Amino acid sequence: MLTDSDLQQIMPKLPQAKRQLFLPFLNKVMEIYEIDTPLRASAFLAQIAHESAELRFMEEIWGPTAQQKRYDPPSDLAKRLGNTQPGDGFRFRGRGPIQITGRANYKKYGDLLGVDLVGNPDLASTPQFAFSTAALFWKNNGLNELADVQDFITITRRINGGLNGLQDRQKYYAIAKNVLGADEPAGFGFAAAPATRSATRGAPVSSQSSVPPPSLPRGQEAIEEEVESASATDTASPDEKKAVAKKKSTRVAKKPAQKLVSKKRVTLGAGKAAKKAVKKTAKKALGKTAGKAAKKPASKKSGKSR
Image (tube, rainbow, N blue to C red; front, side, top):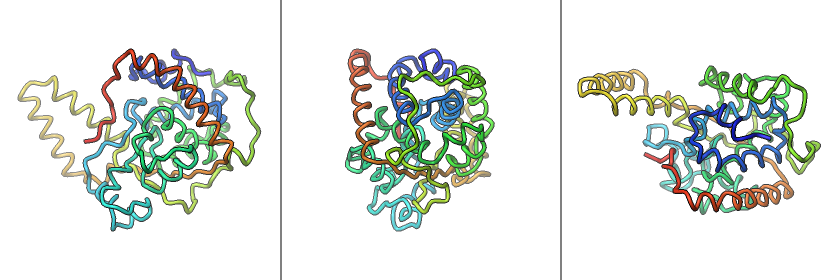
């Protein structure tokens, strides 16, 4: 089972308060969706660490960019995402560690988790549902099996649609494998034995599925660039700030906003048993952390839309 120390070593930038809040949900969904060996856990944690800047960003940063404007009808992208009304692009922007995007995908995830994500889209960025959607994506796309044979490249392609940020993902992967002892054959230490592959878990879905692929216009590469730029201008002298601004404007001119786009394919398939299990365990984990969260003010939301 993942410990606070494990998570701290793998994601050192994640504040302690968030580690303590997220850990019960992470462990529960990893158990439910059989991310239950050091190799599986290492690959899963490495990918979500990159995608969410170490779980600090649970929502897509909103510009809107030129690509994000295409989220709204009548564009072809809006149709693929199931966005039918003006404002659906922002309303159903990417949320969670492996971000779901678009009205159609919010409907699918909501149905699987037994919650109205279409009517309450902000729930998709809360721990009890954000980690569930990430683990559902992982399981249903056959990523456990790829993790077993350490096919990290194919895992990246199924999550990202390409190999954007591969070096950073591999860095987290190496750290996680070292921390979790992935070279050892033993299991990951969950109380329950790994369940057998069954219809209630849902069969892996090919990355070539016909389910509409959502898009994430502001991936981790863009997030990090923005964070570094903000940090530099906060501490720099007036002359240095001008230099940073000039450099940034030059970079933007050379690289259109559309190139800051990483695409993800999210497909799901789970039965009623999975719905009940996720819902029950999420409530249980939330109950354990609610008291602590109520006493301590929440940290500033990292993924605040812009």
